[in-house]
Every structure is written in C-alpha cells, then in structure tokens.
Image (tube, rainbow, N blue to C red; front, side):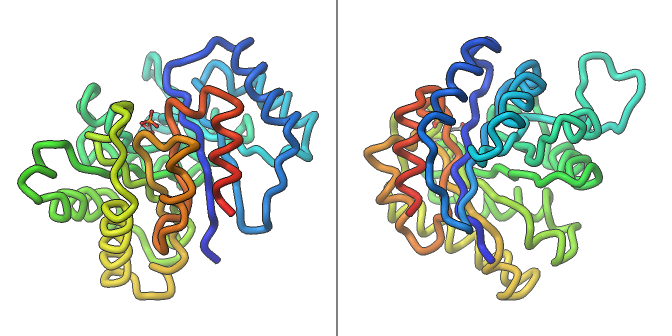
Length: 255
Ligand code: PGA
C-alpha cells in the first residue's frame, strides 16, 4: 500500500526551544490523518532527543521522527559523525539520504549515498532517498538520464522487498529554496518516469508501492495541485516546514 507522506526538512534552522515550540503548535492542531497518511519531521540531530520525549508524551499526534543525515559507518573513531544505531535508539524512523545540499556542498557521491542508504536500512529505518537535477541539466532536457543514474547508482543494489518500503523524494535543485516550483505537470512527468524505472527493475507491484515525494518550494498555495497528481504521493518540505501554520496547511493538502 502506497503511503502518502508530508515530511519537514528543517535543515540547519531553529534551536531546541524553537523546535519544541514548533512541534507543540503541530501537536495542538490535532491533525486528523487517514490510515495511509504519515507526517514526518526531520530536525537537526541535537533536537531529536528532546522531541522524542515530547512526542512520547503526545502519542496521539502521530508525528514521526526523521533525521537529515547519517554516517555510512556503524561506530568507532569517526569524529563528528552520527550512527544509525544512535538515531534508531531515539525512535528515529526515517533518514534523508542524498539531499542535493549534501551532494553539492559536501560532495556526497552516488557511491556514498548508496552506503548511507545501506546504513539506514541496517539500523531498520527507512531512507528518504533524494534525487533531482540541477538547472543546467534541465535546460538541456537531460533530467531523465541524470535522475536515472542517481537511482541506478544509489538504489539498484537493493532487492524488491526492501525497495517497496523506500521513500523517494524528487527535488529539482533549481526549485529548492528558490521559490520557483516545478509545475504540477513537470513534477508528474518526472514522478511517472521514476516509477517506470522502478517498474523495469523490480516489477509493477513494487513500483506501485513506492512513495515518491516532490520537494522544492512546496507551499500551502501549491501543495494541493502538486499532491493531486497521480504519481505525487506528498512532499518533502523545507522552508514552509518551519512555520506551523504553513506546514499544517500543507499536511491538509494531502487528502
Ligand atoms: P524548500 O526545500 O521547500 O525550502 O525548497 C526543500 C528541500 O530542500 O527538501
């Protein structure tokens, strides 16, 4: 069963108190989620422990915790890194892997992204695997090949059963934080293409199960149109996830 998901990627924003206050505002709203809908927040690592306690005391909120990054290593002398086990211990269920900011600013290659996908899976969490093309690739209409290569090199080593529980986020880099969203038609075209890649590799049943999120300047006023596309199963939200009212309105657009 394909899940519909809204995930907030807070990036390097908000201190712990501000994060707690934002989550309290989300909890207060008592958002009514359908059986196939999930809301995830991905705060900075430093906030996860406090937010776990807050969410444990408000189980009815149904908000799930995710992280924004993970070490490809399991444990040991890796100064500054955070392991899958550390995240899992705090009830983190999802981890964003291969976000374009990590690929571009921190030089994460497809090979590193693949290792991080495996690190997430070996700690029994779910990767939110990000892919998407830069503007110069879109301008020469090479986005399909570009995204296909990211998926082949990041995910093709997985078996079908593992794949069916994965989340993919298509985030055209030219739309991230720019206020320039892909049109609903552009998003749907790429999402359908991604699903066709999954179908060729793992078959139609598995391809149908994979949740494919759109990310890149999703806001309350464009969420509904994007989410109503056949192959768009929700969104990965950056800027608009930092404001409780905007995030709540985007969640409501899932229906
Ligand atoms: P944005 O970020 O919504 O601020 O464009 C999305 C993301 O980077 O995940």
